[in-house]
Image (cartoon, rainbow, N blue to C red; front, side, top):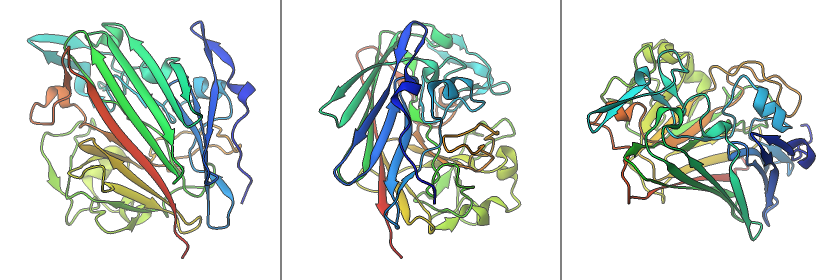
Amino acid sequence: MMTFQLPNFDSFSSKINEKNTHLITLRNRAGMQIALTDYGARLVSALVPNKQGELVDVVLGFDSIHGYISAQEAYHGATIGRYGNRIANGKFSLKEKTFTLAQNNGTNSLHGGPDGFHRQVWDRQVNFNKVVVFYHTSAANTEGFPGALQTTVSYELTNDNQIIIRYRATTNATTVINLTNHAYFNLNGEGQGNVLAHEIQIFADEYLPINKAQIPIGKLSKVAGTPFDFREPSRIKERIEQTNEQLQHANGFDHTFVNKLSLTQPIASAYSQDSGIMLEVFTTEPGLHFYSGNFLANDLGKSGTNYQPHSGFCFETQHYPDSPNQPQFPTVILEPGEVFESETRYQFRLIKS
């Protein structure tokens, strides 16, 4: 096992669009450490103890701000907005007015557009060395979205090895919103091979089938009898290699599962027998998007290893993709005077077997 450590502060000291960038670190009493940057309000590292007592960095990413700027995969660890996931044809309508967005994923708008939240330098505040709060104001019509949006994202590292992410947003005009975090996890350590042997459990009876453009077809489907049935722990490899049209559409798992649980129960977990590390996810969001890293493409990561497909997986807590065009889905509309609030918790545990 290689030795993992947090990136160097100096390698994250830069200036983008006339704003300075930084690396911020948090540590808890249990020995866990995380690193964050204001570029994209993103999670850079999470050092978690494994069953050998070593600290393992379980988050894919880069050892400098320039690594994030130049990476082929732009979303590592980032806060995603204004709209996470896909909007079909880069268009939606509100109050009989059509809004046109950048098409940066085939004909789809993906993750808020090419200059979404992941490309912005956020303002920041550190509270009591345990919480980092990031702030960003997105002007009206940024990337085609209506309304000026004021967004706050906070990260808290608790003493029981939990990362709590809280989102809050307000607008001055009717708009749509879908915020998430796009961390790629490898519970053996970033750069330590693929995650296909990880055991995944998702406590959902239904998921959203997609078409060839990876847009939901508008209905929910039962997971029973399909490769999407993770109600019992299953290795990713055992499911992803099955012959299934839905897996072909996404070149693997890139699907939203329906969350009917509260913050008191995990919607999903992942476990590595090699490290003994388990990750549980709790969220207030109606969806859990499981992405098996199908299109990771040769970026050089923190440990000096090139990331290949399936080098990491994502548990993205969110509303459903293309919801602005599918009114039968839970609403993503935010009105002036309303407050959007959401919370997600990534809980790390050690399972010694």
